[in-house]
Length: 110
Image (cartoon, rainbow, N blue to C red; front, side, top):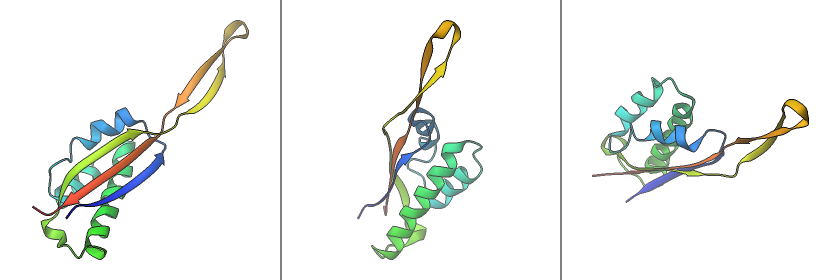
């Protein structure tokens, strides 16, 4: 039985989050938590919290054994972009897009 956790509208770039997410796919949850804990990137902290939430959901809501869980899938989708404007030379302006992510982590027993 699959159990999931979601983090929506997270203020990290989806492209950078996918780079971190592919490191923990198809791993046991204890290994995945250790990898995310010691990865020195901002998306790793966000993925750690979402994975920990998925583990807690599996333990409390579905009565699954935590020692047998593994990371089945990690989806990172684009959220809405925050649009900002930066003044440039000669009266012009440049648009700055601050990207957000929707992160879904799915854990399962083998």
